[in-house]
Image (cartoon, rainbow, N blue to C red; front, side, top):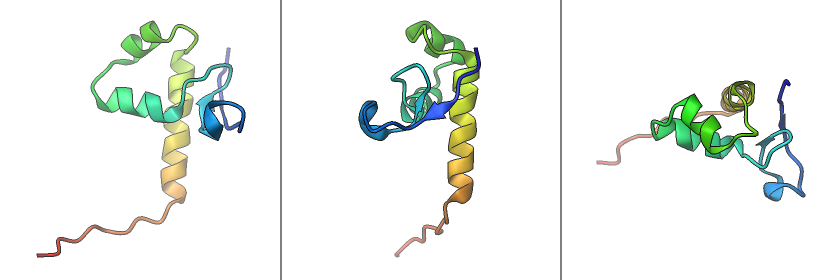
Length: 76
């Protein structure tokens, strides 16, 4: 089953989620950045697949690519 990222105002206040779930891209990124493995995330969320996690990462990469990034400078 291929999973995609959707945004529906009636699901999680419109945050991007893996289709067929209420699991947000944000949650997946937070868990991965905290050191959880893909296997641990799937075990915690059985209706999520490895393809769903990959779709979330792809979505985040594309979203960041579209953003303008301003360098942070030290104000000392």
